[in-house]
Length: 222
Image (cartoon, rainbow, N blue to C red):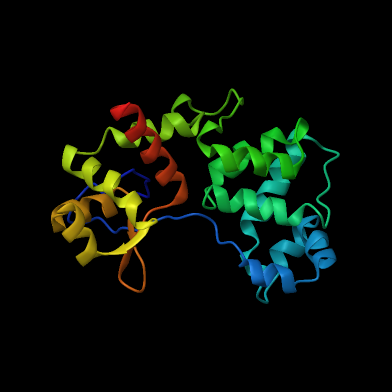
């Protein structure tokens, strides 16, 4: 048996696919109902986080990853109650993507959590790592998305560029009517993780990918 990761399926008969998405995040309403002091204590205690069982604290993995990596960059960093909304916003802006969360946490030495969130609001694609032990292909979101973009066919690119009109979420029927997206094209985009199908049957694109597609389209037609 071989366990491997890939940007797209290998299309082998013996292959079993396990799609990977971002780390789970608590809903805004859930966070507002939490005892923020208890959440801060949880994020500061690795053992307590590992031992957690009850919801809604199970959806704090993304926040805990940010805090852990921020402490690596700035050992004196301690998340406060005021930081929690900003940390949650940071994780949401990068769709819970672990590598992007780690990159954002590296800024904690020069920016506050609120300032990091503000920077990412403008352009999350600027995230990059300064660590020398990170493979070159993973040192920036720009590089990662550029590599993945090269896997796309012209028809797939056309569908993605039209997808932005639907606010990142629409049904297969509407998408096919508006962009002429053939089923094989939609299937390929799902397999390459550019789109995913929700439990309601709609197709959805992550905010990070939407930003990249929008910028690519702007540069292409400028």
